[in-house]
Image (cartoon, rainbow, N blue to C red; front, side, top):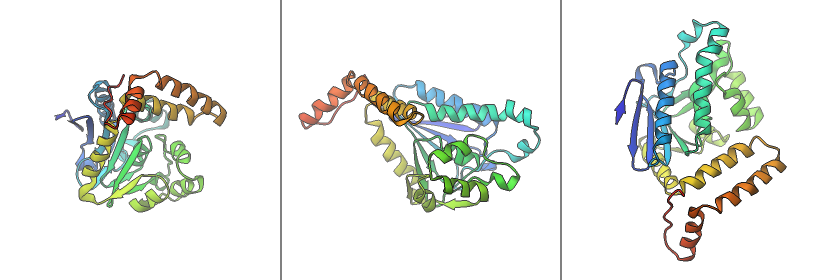
Length: 262
């Protein structure tokens, strides 16, 4: 385990775990934390032994409670745009675009920037104690770290507007019901359940997962016709991998596949 300041980085077999570790601020995001989070993500991306990445928060109260409101209140628009907003948009985009599968283990409050970070991660597992929300409207603001655009692409528009217009928090079960998260688990089993799921994903072909993530990401931004043509080209590329033929051979031979990422 290594720790510089606000981010803990652990490796558990094929799984990398990033823990936002600022319990005194409920794991709020500021520029140094975001830069350290980006650095930690880069290290896990470069580590070929890591095949899945779990993101969580320290303590029992918060995943990420949001941004630093006092810092935000001290800024004017141009300074915010050029500094904090520039960094948080870049870092969140890095998580959205990483080729390795990402999972969130949401252990408590995920408000504002916490929900916006969640929206960039592939699979979201919630503790029964988790609470999600975009309360920026209550501060005279609106979600500005990508949340206003990502959420309308992930859940029904009317529900997204309700969350942003009211600024209310929702519990874990409602978050799953509207499609904002995958499942709710008992609080004490959050990491166990998330790591088990990450472990299953980590046994798949890392190369095919990479190509699948790119196919989904690129296709989601295309009209259906173009997306289908893109999929057709990508599956042809997959069939040039050794892992694809290893998987098919293993199925025919009734044995477990041994994917090498080639």
